[in-house]
Amino acid sequence: VPTEFYNNVINVIRKIPKGKVATYSQIASYAGSDKGARGVSWILHSSSGKYKLPWHRVIGEPGKISLKPGKGLERQRSLLRKEGVEVDFYGKVNLHTFRWKPKSLKSLKRP
DNA sequence: AACCTGACTTCGG
DNA sequence: TCCGAAGCCAGGT
Image (cartoon, rainbow, N blue to C red; front, side):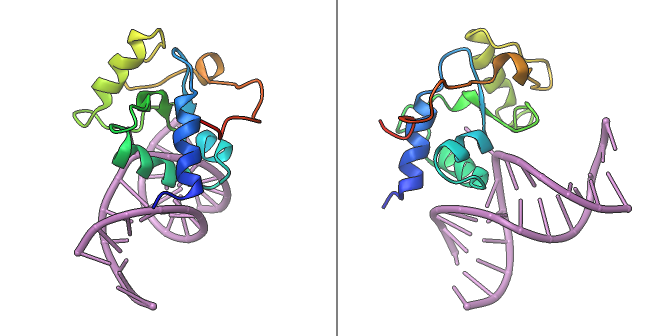
């Protein structure tokens, strides 16, 4: 049974616009749990497929893709580049430029 | 309940 | 700047 946090995370991730990225902790915060970054990680790992989530737009707090080479880094990197996000060889993204900054946090948790 | 494992983050040395 | 430890959340054994 999905928890409220779980549903919130799903809804928030769906709102990340194309060409922007958000961090795990940012998503967790919007979803109502400031320290739920690991929870976000688990949700992506377990159910990004069935909800058709833009999972590739979620990266680590230092502005770097968390996946390792040979374990998905290349795939996430190419998905981001395809929509205009600049990613270097190691998966580094300039958050100053590409971080998603929603105007209002009011309705983020709603579908 | 105890312990482990992650697509995590923060802090100290 | 670069680890390691510790804290964190959720699920699986």
